[in-house]
Length: 54
Image (cartoon, rainbow, N blue to C red; front, side, top):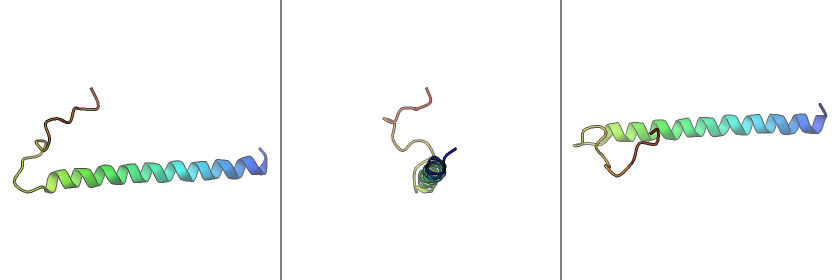
């Protein structure tokens, strides 16, 4: 493996790691916001949001 490609590979790994962390962080932030909304039971915030896993 050439030195140039190796540096690029390391940068790609760091970028993938960073994006994974930021996605997890935003998911946790959204989940926390859903739970901490006052006066509404969990899961009833917006009925128009479809389940993305279907």
